[in-house]
Image (tube, rainbow, N blue to C red):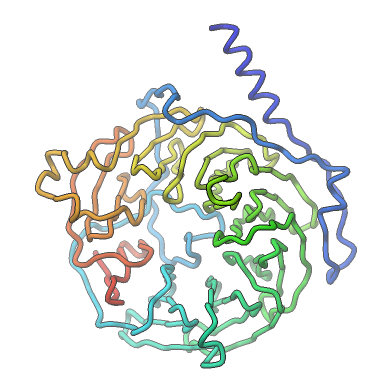
Length: 443
């Protein structure tokens, strides 16, 4: 046993080796930055063999703490904020609800954003909708009109100050005024953008389909500089994922590589490589989840794994093989996931050990939910930590509450309508759109 422990510690130590070489590789604001020249001087941090979640020893549950409950007043990114971190949000749990009539005849994208009593969403034809909850008015803007009606359009949206920022898979980036939904500026960059958008005080961050990072001026859309990462030869539906911590921009790209770049001095901090987790069943196409930053930690995951790293050095603390179904939830001492077999899993952040594991199908046999038929629950649409409880939101308008420390089912609630969008929690209310494109505000 002692021999095994020594070997294990040695393996973990070697796998966490990092580098902190800095290279002043930018030559000017408008010049392209290529990482190929860096590879001779910088070593990539590669992943080691990981453990299977079923083999991990259970941890002591008595000392786990959750993030403090926070009342959010706006939802400016698809994953709430720059860090993609939304753990333990406040919900007044009053089941009074408000609903609208059908807001659009078009199919809507899943993401919804919120600011200043206005809900922002969009349809698959690129129309941006701004719905005012204060007076029930709605404004629309379509940048594309009928010119691209036969093109399979994909748009990406974020909010900042009083503006809506949009990029698309045709190479356009543009900005709308939030109050009036009118165009402020637009730029064409010729190559499709394929990532979420992040915004600091003066800069817009996004990437194109070649995994190149673009940094644009927030006020006019002009390119300030760009950075080329390794380009995948496979085309994927997975979008490059960005997050920001201080002045560090983190990217998980379609090639299974994670980059940390200090965008203030334009230096590369570290690179991680996750090519070992490419699936042979899907022609080596990498499908990542969004990066989550919590304090000095960054959680990196895909459909095949989850791993925790130091945000400053990239050093790996632990890594697990898990077939993720949803994006994880990170809350101080615990990480929560749902795998493709509908197992709800709780992991100890510090060790990577399993705390508890429950199969979603077990909910059917639970006494509290005995009257619900499996076909009436549907699939899990979303997982969130709300008011110190895990909320499992299902496609059949069920909200199942679970104790995050013990994994015990607490209760369930029938929602007023099914869920066909992301679910956001702002100003103490739960907001979503149903399959008939009606807006519901609960609470």
